[in-house]
Length: 583
Image (cartoon, rainbow, N blue to C red):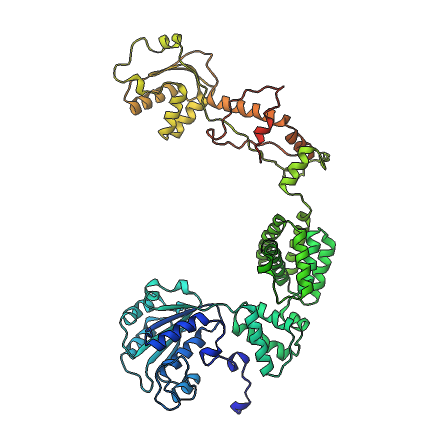
């Protein structure tokens, strides 16, 4: 077949041959231009960016600039290669003997790198420099990278390295530190649309701006992806937005906004009908959910930064519809929809049917759309508006439980504070403790419990809190009544450990009660007392009436942060608001 009759795809046909045709990378071009003009050309460059952004193209342009000799054969390195000399034409046709391109995805080993190292020793055959272009450099093995280090550190004067990668983080820092790095930027939609429009005109193809905007959006800043999609649209014969949208499996942006509006109104039946209609029109359910997530993000940014978030590529009526929808929705509603849609996108990939997963996502979003916010719910419960006590329903028989409303109930970890009296002091110890200073020992039972906690002896601390009903306490002497279930050897264990920790003689004895309640009993009584007070609070009472299956749960808090020292008074309600806090 005649090569002239072979169709060349747009991505190859319109591949930039010089820096003037390279769009969107002005910062990199400026640095390279200055380097060439001043003769400060680095021996190794690494080009990174998303796929199809122009990494390999840039590397070839640099290679041409390094070896270009001009039309008259007397030129030097330049950022404006002539494109007609033997070096330029052979590089474009990938047949230059001194410009070696290596695909690291298929040449990953140290043996391939050894060939480069050996070849770098010899001077170029026809060019000014021997240039090695290594594509997808991050695919090289660890040994291959290590093999390159010495050559990259001290390369021959006639050798240049050009690395291209989409995964810059996978490259060793030892290699990156020996290179100049250029991050190629994604092409902005407006710039990409203008570029596509120019190519369409060059191809004598008429395509409307909305179709080009859809292609640019699907390309996500990649020029090659955009040209491939444009090639596909031209081959499909449809150069209008509807044809491109059908080709891409997208739903109309206006219809996506309509669907989002139905969801936010909680109209599940209408939303499902719209979703299925879009599916029958060729829209991919996963793409539709992704469009809904993008819509939630777009509306959120419209609320906080209208000027920045406004997309000029969208039709005026679509932008007006989006602004009206953003004004009608609260930020917390949009944020909740965003989070739920992200979760739904994960489910679509695992579901047996993408449509079923998308429908379930729409149903969930509709179900929560009309739910009041926590602030609104608390406000309604507080003033009694909009709260209708629900009738109790029998619990389901499948092991399921009712709704549990968890309220923070502060509980104390402090032990009952029993100050030594004159009588207990005489009972505690008739003689002074000779082998320790009493002032250095815990002065109260509270202090003793805190001292045990500092020793990080959890087992003894548990035994003391649940098994000791203190009768009398003085430094060096403890008298208590064992609680039910206390360890039989608790007194001996407590005395031995205190003697070892304090270097003092402790007398721990068991006596007949009545002793004070244990710390655990005191904590439980305090929690029960507080729960009784909470149940009397109008807000809690209204919540329990509205949710009959709800229950109060105690969540222990730090005692230092929420001390409980207010005695329970059934007739005193002035402090009830403080129990629930301001929030």
